[in-house]
Structure formats: structure tokens, C-alpha cells
Image (cartoon, rainbow, N blue to C red; front, side, top):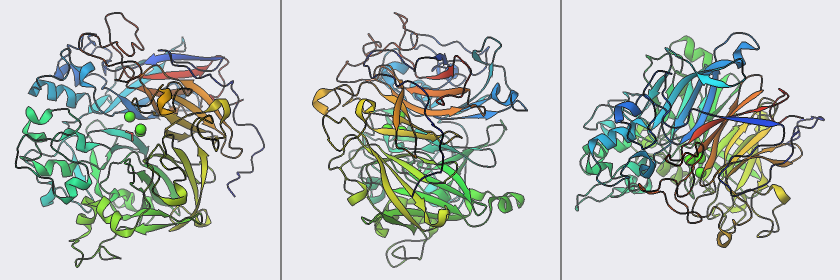
Length: 581
Ligand code: FEO
Ligand code: CA
Ligand code: CA
Ligand code: CA
């Protein structure tokens, strides 16, 4: 039912073996180059990175941020060849590791440290070019810029900027925890705010979370960043409305350095992993997952062709319906509309209006009976069949047949076809595409040597190869007692969606995850992000201010340096298409 009618082989490289070394490996016949690691100046003459982490907040605001995640390449050169030699690389910086960001780690939070951490978050836009030697480098650019945790932003859609729930003490600014992404047909970049709750906290003994704050995981400690001790902005007791300004999909125009990023509230407020788009019947359709165990898969459907809205000066992302998915055990599914006044979302049940439904999207989806999933991460849409794939990275398996393992430490990938092949439809048919894991621990796993765990990043290249990136949490990675003794470091694999064949293409260094992938239009150059090499892991240790290299020293391997997230460029020695025969 999902066949694409193709006869030619899609995968044309030799499988890479697993390993647990502090190196990045790719197949025979492929080459790599490390590009724009954390701290690289945005402009070639910008402030240089200092390996003792002593760069100031002002320096960091002009350098690449930390923890590279979702990414896209926007070609600039005109024509078939030039478009694949020069472009804007736009990438997310999800979070910061304060042990690596500061010379003294995360002790004694100060306003300067909060400012540096904010500057290391968000989105970087850099202009890059391939030189005659075949290597890529940044070039001076009027379009290069940063959108950080402190950049002015605005709100659009049903939750207006003036909404009382968005009236915090400070002006609207910043995007945080930018995980995966999306690209619109009109050439903008969507960056998605995931674990925004982690940044808020308070020392006020009388503070208690309200029901919505509890549902979004806001508590008095957050994830331990401690920013609230140096900045009222992040004190949830003093400035509670600030948290309502996060958890959105944010639209950025990469080619207009003056364009203010816009939070598109019609797409709901959840821990958005990403927002992959497609077009059906001329309308924009955006798929987005809420990455929490037991949370949901959503889609936004525009209310008319996207060009009609743009022609009238409106955003296609401000007008449409947000749905949440119910996956039934018989292999069918239904999209349930999150619309005020419909179903249980009435005044009588305590819902005030559509803005209220969107501000409390998770609670509205609870009321509709959406299916709890095993941490929905990236989604991808097949370029021809328009089938939709979602990574369920791991979880407790409470969703019925769509979550077939209880608990589910390895994750799986589910795919569906919308009714009639129309992505605006409200019914679909789903199946499990692959169950991840180690066959030695679960006989249902059919991966052989190409075993992997915790799928996260997903991306279809234009030929229909599905690239799968893994994020085994560092609390399990490389640990036999967690069933992860044979799987090695996090990796990237390629799948043939028709045959189901999956082959390992790249293995990362210690403590990292692999997340974010795109190619140039000619598919001869691939960009892959290596996030958080050297993060704390029980298998290898913890980075400390005295020894930031305890886990990894990738990519510099400088005896006085520290590990850095980076983009890796991958290409074939013979100049062929990456991944192809
Ligand atoms: Fe930021 Fe769910 O990964
Ligand atoms: Ca991540
Ligand atoms: Ca992810
Ligand atoms: Ca993940």
C-alpha cells in the first residue's frame, strides 16, 4: 500500500560499523569536513572563539551558538551548479551545556552569564560557499545574523501579542530550545520551541504551578540552568506570563536581515519538535510533534491555498485548523480539530476562546482523546507519495497498537497515508515502518548489523531516501545494562521506504547525538549536525570546568580545548549523489 513503483536501488554505500570511539565515521569513498563549530564567528572577521570559554556575551552574540540542531540550506547562486556552491545555512541552537559554555561551569549565575547563554541559543544564519579546493567556508554577508533568546520577536494568529496571557514584564523577545525545524514553500524557515519549561524557576517558597503550568512541566527548578537567580525574566513567580511566550513555531525570513521573527500561534503551544510542511490542494499542511512521553502528533491545515493569503498580504500560517491525531488499533486514524466551540472545547467546559485553546493546546488535545505516543520527534513527508513518517524516540507505550512495546526503550518509526493521498484529509491509514533496537534484546527487531536506537531526526532527500538520525540518551548510550551495549554511539542511517532496507551511514563521536541534515540542491554535498559531543554520560564521565574533555574532545582534539557541536560536510570522492549507488 505504500509502494512507490520504483525499481532502481536507492542505497549505494557500504554500511559503517558501530563504534564507541571519539571520532566520526562515514562509508568508504566519502570525505568529511568540520564546518562552523560552536563559537565560529558569524562573519569571517568576527570575534574569534576562545578555547577556555572566556568569550563574553557580546562575543557570543556574533558567533555560532551551541548545540546545533535542525538546519536548512537556502541556495543563493543562480543556476544548476551555482545554487549548490553558495547559500545560507540556517541552523538551530537547541540549548546550552553550562559546564562547557563558561570557564567556571554553572556555579554563581550572573546577568552576564545569562546573557551569554541566551546568545548561544536560537538560530544562526551564515552564508557559506564551496571553494575551488572543494572545501566550504563562511563568507562576509549582509544576510548573516543571529536570532537569539534576546532578539525582539512578535506574535501573530489567534493569540495576539496584546493578549493578556502574553503580557510579561519585559518586551516580547527571544526564541529558546530550538529543536527541529521546517521550511515553507514561500522560502521562510520555521524554528520550533521544544523544552521551554526548562529555563524557568523560582526561589519563592509560596509559588505553586497552576494546572496549565503543571501540564507543561514548569516547576521551581527547571532543568537546573538557574537563570532565575540572576534574571527576573525567568523567575516564574515574578514574571509568569513570560513562559506563555514560548512553545511556539517561529517563522524567520532568512534573506531579509531586518525581518522580525514571528511566533505563529495558530500552530499551537506544545513542546514543538519541528514542523515539516507539504502542500495539498494548494494549501499549506504542517506536521508537528510534541516531544514528551504520552504526548501527541499534530497537523495544521491552511483554510485556503497559501498563495491566496500571501497575495492579500496575510500569512498562510495564521489561517487554518490545528488537529491532533488519534491512532486506532485497526490501523486507521482520525485528525481531531482543536477548534473552540467544537466537541468538548466549549465555554461550558471552561474554554474561553480559540486563543485559550491554543495557549493550552496540550489540555485541549487531552480533552479530545488524542493518542498518547512514545515521544514524537521529527516528522518527514515522502516527496512523491506524500506519506508521513514520525520518529517515536522512546517511551512507556501507552498508545495501544501504535506503540507496540511496553516500555519502549528503543523507539520506532510509524508512517501513514492520508485518505485519498490528500494531506488535508481528516482520516488516514497507519502502520509501523520499523521497530528500532538490538535484536539480542528483542527478537521482533529485524535490523541485523544495522541496529539502532532512539530514532529522532528524519529527512527525505529529493530521491526519497529516508535519513534517520539517532538520539540515544546519554543515560543509556553505550551501557549494556540498559540494552545499549551493542549499538554504539549515535548514528545516521538511510532507509529505502519501499523495501524497508536500512543501512548505517555515519557514526558520531562520544556523548553526541546526530540531528539536522540537508543537502545542496544537486545532492552532492550533505550537511549533518553533531550535537552535544562530550555531554555527561554514565559510560564515560562528566565534563567539569577542570576537565571539559572528560567524555569527548571532538572535533578539535586540542589538549587544552573542549568539545564543540558542529556541522559536518559530507561528500563523495567521486562527486556523486550522497547515499546513491
Ligand atoms: Fe530536542 Fe526532542 O529533541
Ligand atoms: Ca537535541
Ligand atoms: Ca530531537
Ligand atoms: Ca531526542
